[in-house]
Length: 417
Image (tube, rainbow, N blue to C red; front, side, top):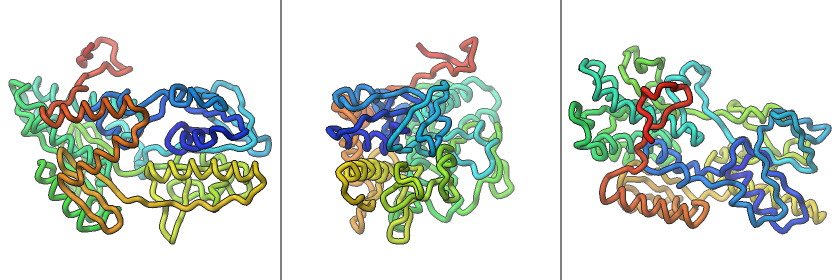
């Protein structure tokens, strides 16, 4: 198993009790609940609240060995995986579930000025950037510079972009109220930029409209219908106009893991591997691709790159492997779509459950219950509930700690211990 995300972990767990030896390989030692990653980026939760060590999760599954390392090559004829440390792993079946990364549509130079959100490292870097923006605004005497530091932009109007923008507005208007002496955080401008005609394009249009209304009530400026043309350290350009904004966040696109290019299989425009009906690689039935790296179509539509789909793919791969071991025919994958959820802010969300549409307070409670239920481990669920209960009554976000970045040597950026 390459990848300890939703697909890799669910495949591994589904093979418990099967007569197989499983090696789970990941560059990081933890499983991450990505749907709540934006909460770490915006200081609502700490990293351990939404992550758990893979060894701990799998400690009772005796047929699993967890290996910390990075796959750099796949030798299909020899059935082996090359690791960055020079070691190799041999396999009878290979499951590649290495996920996706940020896509800047050919403008990779924007990455330094508009970080994306995929890992805990990303979240902590974004949290640092957000909190430092208010500190820089407090420290400057130049009104134009202060306005630029208090200007935030989120590029991309999907669920992640909507969640980031809404939470940013709440932080400025509620969490930081009365904490500064020279600035009013409530004067911060939060813009959500979407190139398409509406936010949350994967939702029904009626819910998209309600989401925009809820965002605007929180104080977010929603800009749709025009793409960002340039991003640099000073801000971004849109419609030929340069907008000063010292903090720009990227939530506009994803690209498949580069491991997909090593599998000698057709790929789509995003680099995802086009798999067979059972999620195996065409021409290599012993190799499977699952999660965000797999390009799967069902009923003429692509299966979305969301956590439920990745979990179902992982479980299905395990089902196919068990069937083959038993000499049975491998079933085709069938995605069960349970609906779409997106939170916008405190007591604001939208829910689409196949014709059953919710927005506002009731949708927020539904979103909260669903996300807490699917967290790994009782401790995580309990801690997240306690933190959210506290945040609900106090508007406070307990993880507002500015950590020193790896590039800092003198602590001048305000490391907090």
